[in-house]
Image (cartoon, rainbow, N blue to C red):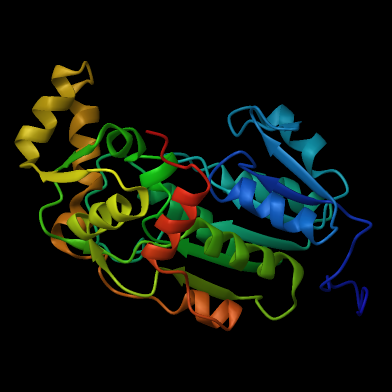
Length: 293
């Protein structure tokens, strides 16, 4: 495989560690695992990771950036820290950036943004494009893993998922597919300048998703649709501040309104194969003990 040509990064540079920020998160830890399975050196960085990295402490940036040429950047929601981080990375000699962004961020009608996340994501994308580096942007939709290790996991284990999502559907994407796309962009030469919107191969409703998990686990799990007002009231009753409760309800809007039903072509374009189905995710997660009784 080719090495450096005219100072540009090529596909395989084992002498330089690949920096993965957010290395303990859903996509980051899978990216780390896949890179190491390829025998590539990885600098796994997070607040509680192998290498200390804190978005809010710029004094932690230089140590993780030293000597790296390729970086997976997982943004901190609600901030505009990607731009100064990329500027610092350029000074350290970085040549390739893969940015984790969000599906639908360029659509002002996609969802409400009461949590103040959108501006940071848009600025992060602009910073990467303007950096002069080889860049790729990953825009995943709803993670299938929200049902097993994220937003919905506790409710699924308890047997009842209560959300203000109505009968809407989403094309949930498996984090394994997200990680596979990121690793390809970090290690191959054909992804520069690409924006990959990532989804599963078809949309499923929450009723269908929960039924699929029930079948995979052999457990009785149900989805209960709530009104926004009822959902917010339940969260406030549990001790959440009203503004935070409303922000959580707003996050459900793409599900409720069906704006996340569409299927994207990012996985096939990046990997040359179809993404995993929600049923495949549920079966493999259940087999691995992902939903203990």
